[in-house]
Length: 269
Ligand SMILES: [Fe+2]
Ligand SMILES: [Fe+2]
Image (tube, rainbow, N blue to C red; front, top):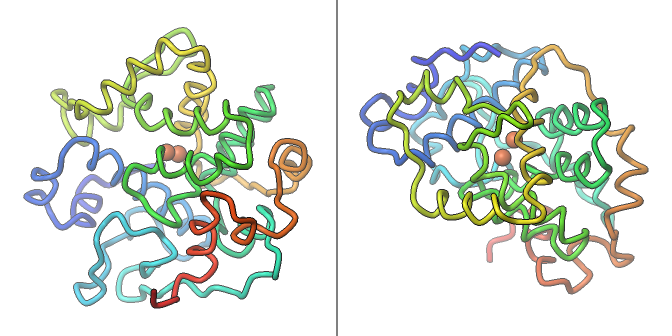
């Protein structure tokens, strides 16, 4: 996907705003920009170059998840229309009714599937960014926490650390520092200390490669021409995601409230 540097900077409020952002925030903004641009271009509504900021009256804190902010091309930004959810929602219901079109994570998981990765890695790729519908800041940590009660610990661990690993190359699996980051932010781009610390912890961990493989699939997952579907992943979800019989949000788990918040994003309190 081609990124227009000027349009991207404009979407953040201009060069001065970008200069004031810390490197982690810049990288987050870039990933969100690309993900949104991908969804828009696949929807046939606009191109990446036409993605521009929400009008000033729609101002929200940047970390707010996609369900809570207007989406779409400039001058036609609208709050996402959300269908009611079933009484006992499943993860698949969330993909269809809250995460859709979810092109970025579907492309990541499709690449993991096609390259013969384990089902745990495939599911980690499928889930790795879905929490951005709820919240974008520190999405690795939030995303891991949200799914933790329902998956093998290895899967949530990998999602937690993919956020930090993006900034660090690993030639053993062909992962290079994203050229795009260098192009957009310059050579002297330094992630904040907590990201560096997290990387160093992850590097020595027995599940390092699970998190690393999310980043390997992440880079290839912004293809505006790809056609993807949830269908190939239904059985993998069935085998590795412990769907609560009461429905996500109603099972009393430590993260049930996060699912409910996505289910009912307009509840006042
Ligand atoms: Fe991510
Ligand atoms: Fe991603």
